[in-house]
Image 1 (cartoon, rainbow, N blue to C red):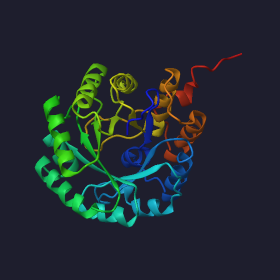
Image 2 (tube, rainbow, N blue to C red; image 1 turned 90 degrees about the horizontal axis):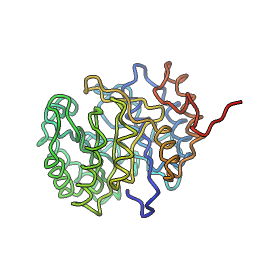
Image 3 (cartoon, helix red, strand yellow; image 1 turned 180 degrees about the vertical axis):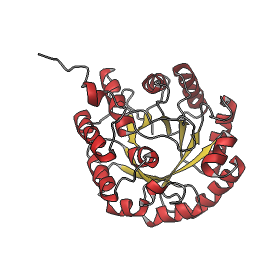
Image 4 (cartoon, rainbow, N blue to C red; image 1 turned 135 degrees about the horizontal axis):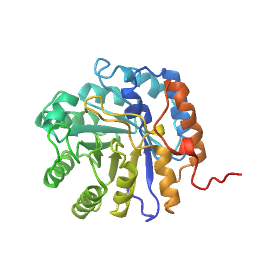
Length: 305
């Protein structure tokens, strides 16, 4: 959600879901719980804990309910889950999530690959989910995936993005995330789309979800900030990626994003040293290195003997 403070942004951590879903090895449940608990103390606004998706579709997230039941919840932090269907919404309610995230790709072919549904079928599913969660007090966020480009159809029109936002809001969805699912966006495009959305929906809780596939994630984030964006998704270490997007690599890196904002005089409320400590431990957990830069090079104010 956009802050009233012009120089403050919200950082939403997605490593547990978008980061771990595409890992070659299953991250143990107790490791996910431990990481969530430690992230809760860093100052991030949201933690996307998992997805209530079919274990056959995303085996790495088969322990979603166990993770939610095992984490400690810190006041002021929202614990969210991606929900793909009605059964997922029911499981989310059982786990007392703070927010559910509904996702549709506006690229029809990517939506078929990712969600196994046409866009019309996804929207029909959303209506049923809204009925399931009605009266629960859970915040409903809707993500527009492939908003900046689809791997199978190319660039999407601004008009289609705006139509999707109007459709989501008509369904009762409260917040919107625009996602560069496969890292096709460029800074000018991101700035223009952000400004256009906010002209049409000035009151909209709007979030940007970036991937760093083509090394433009940080530039895109700053362009979005300059256009009025004040809420950003990112993943610790810069890991992650969509299993159904050819060539897609990780999310924009949380510690790199926070470092950039802080160096630009923009407050995130996030403890960067704490993030770097967690990121430094990720390679041992995953069994491989991570793409993030700051954890390797140190912050830009680092001086040497």
